[in-house]
Length: 449
Image (cartoon, rainbow, N blue to C red; front, side):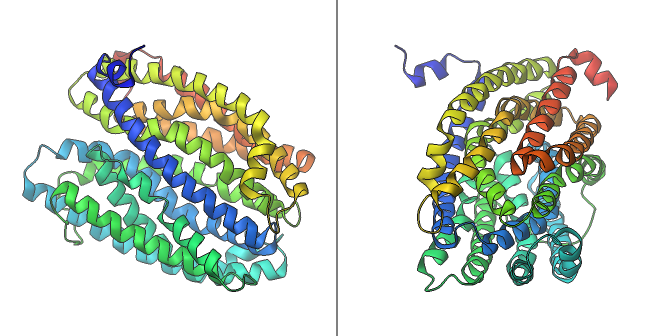
């Protein structure tokens, strides 16, 4: 039997770079997700399925959606740009990084202030189904999640800089907020309010942001002193691509808030149930698929920059089929092990056996998305490396429309499980669309751009 090292050495260099990067990302993700799982165990132990968790889940989703959307759109278009700038002179790179960070800080500050000021309106519009006490707690949590908007943008830029260098330590540091929350919740004398969650969130995001900035500066060999300006030659193409990509990201970003709004109107504890199931599902999604997706984009962008579009397309399609099959296996195993997994992570303290049964039922319907999510993520990186942002935006809008319709159809009938099934149907549509686009000949794809 060949060792793993021998098998990797026999692969084409591009496949080997993706595989090696994916293994590093998977290792870091596993550690990070383990930290996240311990945090969820601590929250479940101290709070159970309660109004505090309802408030935390609602606030985290609603406050994070816009900064996470901006980071998602910017990262996809920024990483190929950063890959290309590696060959440029130091002064040009320093100017671009400085201007990039200057605008990120400015936009993040405005976004933080806007989040805090607009939160009462958000609660009236999207949180009207929450109990009064949960609404009050949500307002308190904005003291952490408003500044976290700025910190999230700064973290996203630093992570993109590291990924462009095919360094994936940022994946491990994604767990820093979870670790800090875990410690704060466990050390809290009482958990009658949101105080431990508030301070753990704020301090965790701050540590993560500073740490990643330092690592990115080491990787690039420069800090990139922040300044406002658009003098770098990268800006015209970057702004155009980011604007198109942001349309799709905004559409997809509404999925989380729509789920929270739908769950909030299903009654008390629906948000908590959906939140526990979603976070357990995220463990599987992150370790399995995100590892390959994060490792693939800089490699595919590098292949495209060498002018070998056919090679990039073939590489991505092979990995997509492999990930689709792997996702199917995970779905079958996960459906069988769902009650055991929920009980292992959450069933203690205030989290009862009845809660385990409820969350496991919701989780099973969410597992149906796994094959499609696994398979589509590598194709997303392929189209991003080809600058196919208009098609990506169109697919994202179609996904959002289907998700919004199916939430309204399925949730009243199935409860939180219907929300999960709607997500699975959305990813199935996404996979079909991306496969159709990716299967087009490389010459035809280039022409359509």
